[in-house]
Image (cartoon, rainbow, N blue to C red; front, side, top):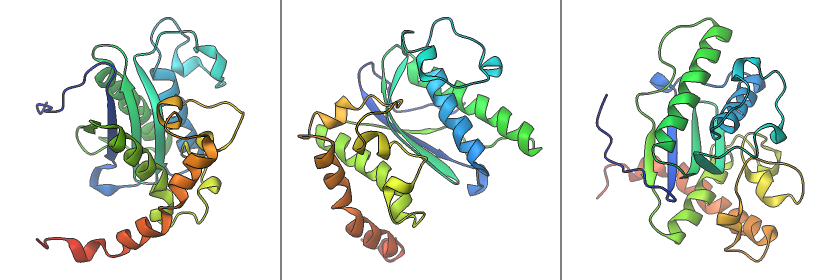
Length: 215
């Protein structure tokens, strides 16, 4: 296994991402997205809990009192890749969490879609968050992914990210939002923080190819 240079330190935040091998689609149906969502919820907890394979119906209340090995802060699932902003709680938490998530989802996907072999492209990528400014920027970058990719014109209509957890009052979610929202007066100010950047991010994406190899 290749040596990983990024150290995983307890209480630190990390941007975790990976894509399908050969850039292939990793979510073919909404059921696939839902399964990945359930998988990241389930494996953030340690302690006794039902086997995932026998956990027929997903309920937030099932494990919420169990200790966590990581906290999920932000997420977004795209057709051929995913982004997570997570915080390590226990020694080795991120490596354990990601190993179980990726292996478990790969087994599910290969069985359901009748394929064999690796689904994801090598080791997951990880970037340690070093400043509050970077933390907020990464959260915005992750939430803007569907808009920049032109999968939706309204982020509130995209169901496979944590955006609605952040901008909608009430309801259940899986994210620990206070790490982000504590920097804002309320969720509406965070929504403005995201939406004010939409057009700029989209323009930047459209000229991205012009910036390659230009010093």
